[in-house]
Structures are given as structure tokens and as C-alpha cells.
Amino acid sequence: MFAISNLSYIQSMSITILAIESSCDDTSVALIQDAKMIYNGVYTQKIHEAYGGVVPELASRKHEVKILPLVQQALKTAGIKKGAINAIAFTRGPGLLGSLLVGTSFAKSLALSLDIPLIEVNHMQAHILAHFIDDPKPAFPFICLTVSGGHTQIVLVNDFLDMEILGQTIDDAAGEAFDKTGKLIGLPYPAGPHIDRLAREGIPKFSFPEPRVDGLDFSFSGLKTSILYFLRKEMAVDPGFVKNNLADICASVQNRIISILMNKLIKAVDMYTIKNVAISGGVSANSGLRESLMQTAAEKDWNAFIPKFEYCTDNAGMIAITAWEKYKKQEFCSQDVSPLAHMEFERL
Ligand code: KG4
Ligand code: ZN
Image 1 (tube, rainbow, N blue to C red):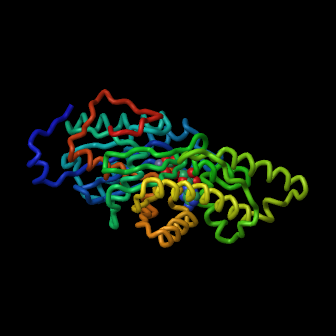
Image 2 (image 1 turned 60 degrees about the vertical axis):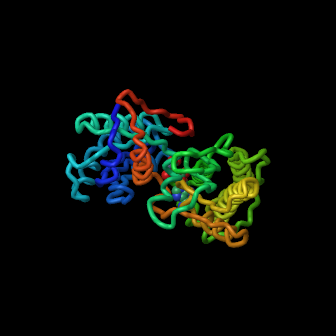
Image 3 (image 1 turned 135 degrees about the horizontal axis):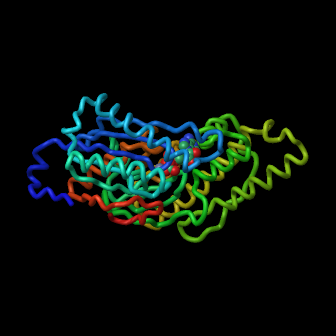
């Protein structure tokens, strides 16, 4: 295990970290120099589009093919030599085990061969710290709604590496609600961006129930079932119902997902009386959610923070900024580390 004993040495030189993200279907490599992002490249695997969801075996095979060329491309574009890298960071979890294994093994071998420290990063923590890549940056403490394909969480963020989950989904994630609805109405995976685009042209005239879940937890599986039953009923009467009402269906589903998310976020802000509020994760790219947050913030006098589009969905830039915070604290991991499909959300 690495320990850099002379901290003033760290402070006096520029630190370059190479970060790898491979938790799901995006292979991504970033380079950060101190807190400044100098490269963030993402390869999105299109192969899953036809299957209506990520096929884990195909995802890990694609990561294997892509990871080395992406690292080479990153170093070439940024004009950085391998020998100038000070640490290698990687996503340890949560995610698909096969996909994580590719990034973890690659990071471990590169760190070993260069004889430099290795930094493990929690993907969900990284989604939140994506807010610290560019200005404006939220002040601590803040409340973050993290909405991705696999997670929906309300998190109290006390400091860079000190976070507490206040509530989370008890079944499906918000991104899954978008993607599973998309599959029902014939949209390609991931359906979130397609529903977002179509919803802009529609009217939210169909009503879906808001689940009753205690506290700050969420549930989206009931919504998925009610959409399925609604579509079955309407299609029995008019087989062209989905085709003829696509934009209105998208607007109605999106509206309900946003109201479920926003109602819990408002509840959390009221309970904790913290007015710095952020959103993160793939679904934070949704234009309706972004507008709704800005509107609520204006009404309730919140300081709202929305990440740039490129840092909403999976990217290694967010892994790199988290790694930079860990590097400053010398939070390195050993070569014995293995990936985790489920990863506790706590200080690592
Ligand atoms: O954070 P992310 O890239 O990957 C995970 O960690 O899961 O999130 C992916 C999710 C997918 O469910 C995708 O449909 C959703 O984010 N998403 C969106 C939008 N862009 C991506 N959902 C709604 N509207 C969008 N514009
Ligand atoms: Zn993610």
C-alpha cells in the first residue's frame, strides 16, 4: 500500500491522475491535473440499443476491446506521457460485476507497472462530486438528488467524502422507470433521452398514480405496472394508441416521474432546512427535471445546482475529481481490491 509521507511535496507539485469508469455500458477515461480536468472521453456502447437494456456479457466484452485504445487516446490528446501519471483511479462499484472487473483489472495492472498509487471510487459518490468539476460549485452542506439508471437517492453531502443517504428507492430507479416505459412503447435503450425529447411536443393529459411511500424513500415499480395496464387497456380499444399518442404518453410519464422526485426533494429540504440543493446522475440531464428544479428553487429561495450535460451521465471525469479529493487525503487502496456490484455508500 502506498503512503506519501511528505505532504508538502504533494502541495508543491502538480498531480496528474488517470481515471477509468466501466461500471455499466460506457467506457470512459479522464485525466485530471490537480482539480483541473484536462481530458474526459466517453465511448457509449451502442450494441445494447437493440436489446432494450444492457446485456452484461456484451458490455464487459466491449469494455475489454475499448479500454486500452481509450487510455492511449486520452494520453495522446492531452500530451501526457505514462511516466507523468501520479495515480490511477477506477470505479470499484456499484455496477455490473463483469464491467467493473475490466476497469478494476486494467487500473490495477497499470498502477502496478508504473509503480504508482491506486484509488478506488464509489460511482454514486462520484456522480455527486461531478458538481466540483466546474463552477458554480455547491457549498457544504447540500442536499443532492442522485438519479441514475440503477439508483435513486437523496443524499446529505457534508463534505467531499462525507455523505449520508437520507432516502432511496425501495424497488426500481428513476432511470429504470424511463427505460422500462420506453421499452413498452417501442423506444430504443436508453429511452430517457427519447422520452425527454418527445415529451416536449406532448401534453401530460394521461394521469398515473403517485405512490405512497414513507419518509424520503421512493418507489417506481407501481408506476411501471400502471403504465403497462393503461397501455394494454387502450391498445385493446385502439391498436394504434401508442403510435397516435406517443408524445402525450411521454409527457404524462415524465411529468409523474418528475413530480415523484421533486415532492421528495422538497420534503428533504424542509426536514433538513438546507437550501443548497443539487441533482446528479443520468436522469439529471432531463430537461423537465432541470426546469422543475429551477422553478422550485426560484419559488422557495433555494440555491440550485445542475451539472453540465457531459457530467450527468456516466463519465470518468467524475471518477477523476473524486480521486483528486482522495489523493489529497492519501486514500489509496491495495492491489488486493476487487470490484463490488453492490457498494456500501459510506466514507471509503
Ligand atoms: O448515470 P447514468 O449514465 O448511468 C447509471 O449510473 O445508471 O444514468 C443512465 C440513465 C438511463 O436510465 C437513461 O435513460 C437516463 O439516465 N437518462 C435520462 C436522460 N438522459 C439519460 N433520463 C431522462 N431524461 C434524459 N434526458
Ligand atoms: Zn451512473
